Every structure is written in structure tokens, then in C-alpha cells.
Image 1 (cartoon, chains in turn green, yellow):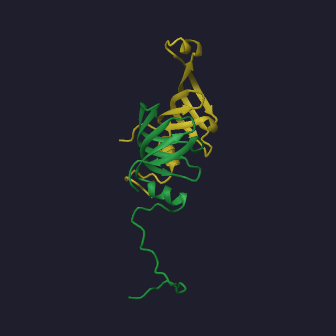
Image 2 (cartoon, chains in turn green, cyan):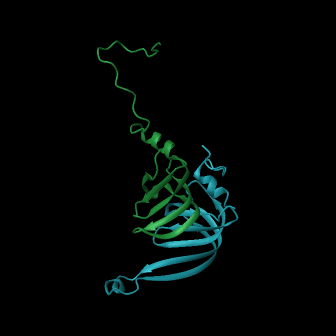
Image 3 (cartoon, one colour):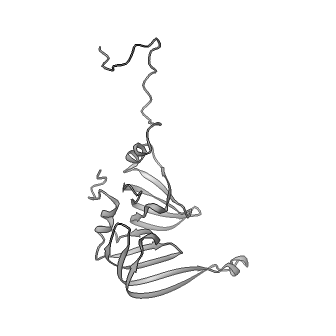
Amino acid sequence: MTDARAEPPTEVSPPPPPPPVQLTGSPTDFLKGVVGKRVKVRLVSGVDYQGVLSCLDGFMNIALEQTEEHVNGVVTNKYGDAFIRGNNVLYISALEAL
Amino acid sequence: MDVSGTGIQEPFDLIRLSLSERVFVKLRGDRELSGILHAYDGHMNLIMSDVEETIMIVDTESAMAGQGVVNVAKRKMEMLFVRGDSVILVSPPSRT
């Protein structure tokens, strides 16, 4: 059993590997992981869109599938597909485990 | 990064596949459009024809009186240029 990492020898052994749930990582890592998952997209106007995230780009333009529009918690519209222009996005929240 | 076999790799693909189709567009200022999409660009500037615009007008006086609050105005336009910065959402016809 060999350790290929070129680390200087330390007195304490390294901590055990993290659990599979990845709580660290860059925003980009989050966005990569959340593609294909159910998400909630909140716009700056306060309107929510819940659906499956098909893809997104550098402007944070978003393509959603099976989208429900929620205003004040009430479903106000449904779209098979929806393109959301990125400048309107406040946040993207994962609705299922990554 | 293709997800469910729909052939969409970036969000603009959704728009490209909707050219010459009737699309629903949600705009800033409580406006909605339904029309045939003829052209678009990276700003989401749109050229649409046979457009019906729906404008939701909130009447603040009747809202305070607890009455019906939303009035709807509609109008039709033959050909329309939409400046991209007012676009919130574009929904193509359902792909079946």
C-alpha cells in the first residue's frame, strides 16, 4: 500500500475522507452538480420557477423542463420548457440531493 | 452535458429549436407576448410576428378597497422587435 501524494511528513494522520455529500467546492462545482436535478430558481421579482434544470450558461441563462411558476407559493403557470434570461436570476436552489 | 436526451447543450438551443414556432414570452412590466418567433440574438432581442400582447394592470385604488385588482389589456401587432433586456422568460411550444 503506497501513498502517492507528495506531502511533507506530518505528525498527525490526515482526517478521514469526507462523506460523499460534497458540502465544499466552488459555485461552478455546485452548478455542474445540479444540472439534471430538480431546482427552484428565484428571480429578483420574487417569482419562483421549479423544474428540472436542463442546462445553463455563463450569463446564468437557464433552460428548465417541467417548469412550474410559483407566485406567493401558488402555482400560476406550467411550462414544458422554459428559457429564463440570466439577469433576472436571484438564486438557484437544489430541491434534491446532488 | 446533455441531460434527458433532448439534445440541448446550452439554454439558447431551446430558443433555436423554437424558431418559426409560436412562443410565449414573459416581459418586465407585467407584460406577456404570444407570437411566431422569427429571429433572436445573444441579447435575446426578438423578432416576432402575429403577436398578441397581454398587459396586466394592477389598479391600486381598487386593491386598497379589496376589490378585483388586475385588469387585463390586450392588443395585437403584426410584426414586433423586442429589446432583449426586458425579456424574463421564453417558453417554446411543448416538444413532443
